[in-house]
Image 1 (cartoon, one colour):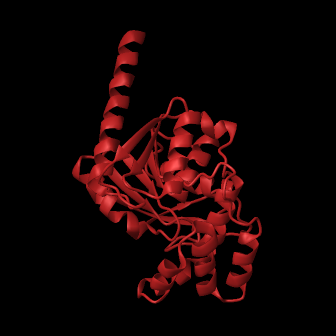
Image 2 (cartoon, rainbow, N blue to C red):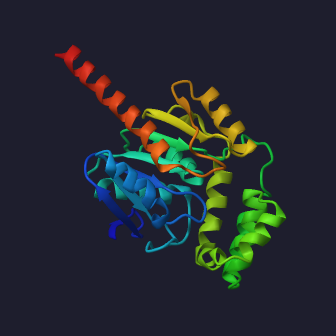
Length: 272
């Protein structure tokens, strides 16, 4: 793993696979850099560089209080700077919310890919006190309960699914990420409805969603495409039920980056 230092001094861990234009992968709830490895390897296979990141309070990355969404935007900026200062960004789930927020804050990106961002646009919002209750559980050393609470009220998983996860070996790996549930809850509440700057970011945007996926995400991506007039909505049929298929996703990333390059060459030719 390599490390970048964010604006508040927090150490952010990342890993690089392949060469070429970096594509920074920003995962969603409970995701670490390791979860992005299959996508990073698929990017490397087509001549791009996959960059997987441990968001703050996850994996090998540090954490510095107090948390604010802008701190995570600075984390992303630090990673992009560390890999050469120019990169595309692929955000999945809450990582897509973060990616769009960061772009609106001026974090430089070649292209932004938003995979199933859970924007709610003011409908069916989690309770406003969810972040505070999550933090209280974490502070009391009850990380497992925080994980379950976030799954129930932040994500909206059905109780049978929550119980299945809690009784599986996977659950033990989620508990150390409990602090990150607070941050995801704060971030997604703060920009549940995208701001004007997020609707018109200074970067090309492609919205990705699977088929089928959860109704909330279909509604979110359709609504986002409606308000972001310059963004393209692309259905990736290989991605299903909020899972990101590496091959199908890389196919769409590669196409859009190639189109960006063609447009850039055309503009340079016209300018000359």
